[in-house]
Amino acid sequence: NGCVLAARKRGMDDCPFCRTPTPKKSQTLAMIRKRVAAGDPVAIWNLGTKYDVGQCGLEKDVTRAVELLERAAELGVKEAHFSLGCLYDEGTDAEEDIARSIRHWEAA
Image (cartoon, rainbow, N blue to C red):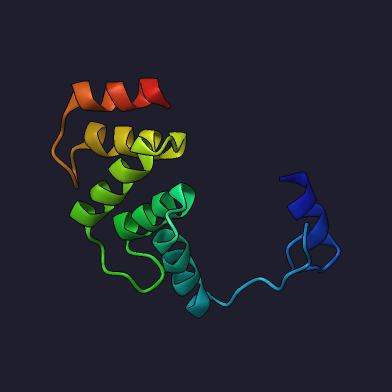
């Protein structure tokens, strides 16, 4: 994103749109969970990706990640469809299912 890049070049770590300070890593998970509780589809996708790779202090839990990504995909998040397509195509963490992966990629 060009706006974010320009802000970083000027030494601004705040949000380039609202100037809110960037949250500390310890606050990130709490903020995401708050948005998930409010039903925010993008936050649901974001939390699913965190579980998929084990970020923000979460242990890697592919089953939980797939649940969250499926929910976000049902709510219309195209990135969730793409993530699910990759998970089902690779078959390393989730059961390999090429037909499912293609269906999710087409939806994305």
